Image (cartoon, helix red, strand yellow):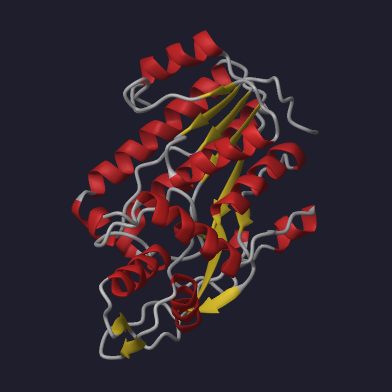
Length: 313
C-alpha cells in the first residue's frame, strides 16, 4: 500500500550515501514528516537514547540506513568497532521500533553478506551457505545478524520488518577520498585530477577484465520506497541493476564523461580481484521494480555533483 505522506518516517543515517538519497526520494513524494537526527543529536549505539527518541517521536516507518562502513584496511584495523557498533545500532533501532509499534521497518544491508565464492549471479538463498570474504567479515556478520533479527521479530511477534541488500552503489554524496573510496568514485577522481593537471596518461591496476555491477543510489532509494509499499515477507531482497560492466568498460566510460583526452594504461602486474560479482535481482524484478538510471547518465550526474563539491580542491 502507498506510503502515507503525512506519516512520521525516521531515516536513520540520513547523512550517508544511502540515507541522503532516501530523504531526497521521500521529499519528491511529498512526505512532510521526515524525522532526521545527526549523530550528535542521537547516538544510535546508546540504547536508552534510542528508546527515549522512539517513545517521544513514535515514527510509523523506519528506514535503517545507519552503519559504520569502511574499506578493507579499516575493517582489518578496527574489527571490534565494525562488529560492535553495527550490532548496537541495529539492535537498538529494531527493538525500539518493535517496542513503540512502528508500522514497518526496512533494514539495509550490503552484498558483502554473501559467501566469498557464492554462485554468480548471487541469489538470496546463497546466504550462509559457505564462508565469507575474510577481509570484511566483521561488518558482514553484523549485517547478517540484522537480517536474522528482522526475521526473528517477524516470526515471533509478527513485526513487519523487511531487509534489502544493495549491490555496489554510487552517486550524490559518494566518498571520493583518494585512499579509501570504492572503484567508481576513485576512477572518477583520478581522471578528473589527470585532466586538471594536463597529464598524458592514467594508470589503472589490473587488466580491466573483472565484471562488476553498479546501481545509482537514487535507483536504490526508489527501490526502498517500492519495497516499503509492496513487500512484506521473511526473506531479504537483492537490489541491483542486473547489468554487468567490465572494469575496462567502466574506466573508458568514466574517462569519456570526465573528458580526459590522455591515454588509459593498464598495469597488469597488479591484482585484478574477484573475476565476477553480480546480484541475482530476479526476485525484485518479479515484484515489479526495475532501475531507471543508465550507468552513463548516472556517471554524468555524479561527475556534476563531484565538480560542485570537490572540483575546487
